[in-house]
Amino acid sequence: MGYNYTMNLLIFAQVAGAEPAREMSLLMWYIGACGPFFGPVFLLISIVFVTLSIMNWLAISKNAIVPPEMIEQFQAQLDAKEHQEAYDIAKDSDSSLGKILAVGLVKMSDGVAAAEQAMSDTAEAEVMSLEHRLSILGMIASVSPMVGLLGTVFGMIDAFAVIARTGGAPQASALADGISLALVTTQIGLLIAIPALVIFEVLKNRLARLVHELDTHVENALNRFKQT
Image (tube, rainbow, N blue to C red; front, side):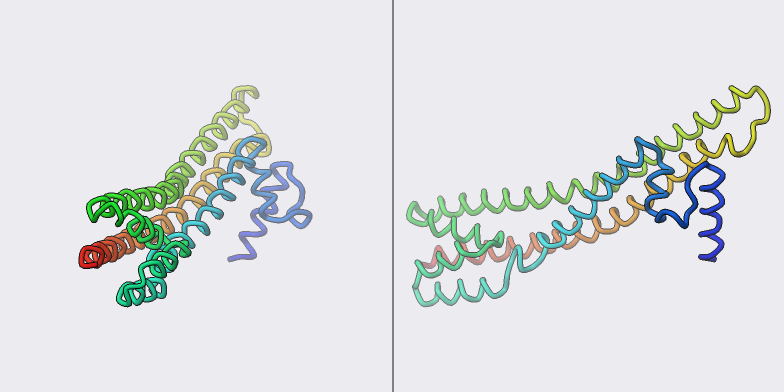
């Protein structure tokens, strides 16, 4: 099946006037088949998609939001009444919970209400930042098929324009460019959108679970502050 698919691509590329497949990679053939506009657009979308997937995967993780080791060290210092050391542990952590706890300890001098408000504002800002970055990934999953559909429309318009110019039944090679653009852009749009949608949903569910855990730790920390 793989051999037949490769041979079909080779034949189609030769009919469309492209270089033989043996002289260029499959990726370059796809970019060329998309034309001078859709090729760079899809390449840019793909780069952004891969970059955002890696960034979100690293940012939406337990160690980045609620690291267990930092929580244990922080609680141990609070139990020992070492508030400065507890603040240093939270401040040195790059995690979302660490930033929230550090702000809360700073504001404790103004009272528990001020600390609670500061922690709530910081938590909201942290969650909004994570959700905003993740929403861009969801937008890619929605926009990619639309870009592919736009390429389909352009390709079909080009094919019908060939028929209109010839005034009869044109040769298949004359229609190949338009049909190639119509099919390839649709395929690439779906090839980007499907994994983007899967990754978006997986990270969205993971974020919801970690935000719930974050709220629990923040509430526990507030209770400890009140006792202190």
